Length: 146
Image 1: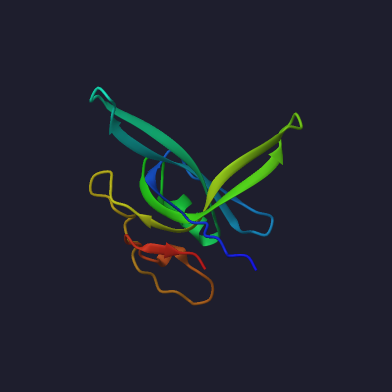
Image 2: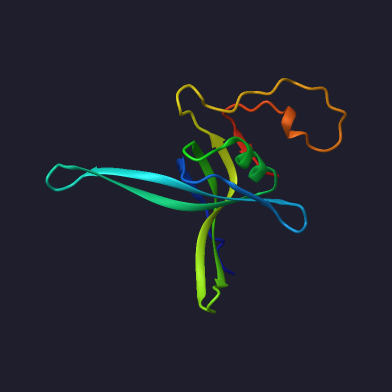
């Protein structure tokens, strides 16, 4: 019997691109976005150095729709998920690989002045049935996908 592994990735950074929302054939939302994390240090001469690392993220379903609706390039965010590597062939028939974080949870993070989360919409009466994300007030909370 083998031991089960742990595949968990946690990223806190700024969106390096606008979220790209599309829908799969089954109607489920798929969002791709790039997030930059920065590292700062002093070199051997004491001079400050900085480097950005860019991470590919993909989010599915309601989580992806919320990211696409409320986050924009430059906005900070805290993302948790797991690493996934995909393989495909390019137009010349060469094998290519891409590693990305499949987002399971995320949090809005303060930034850009006083904005820490999207403004809460005015509560609307609902008729029930289905998910009405336009009537859910968002605050800096942990968003959990089902």
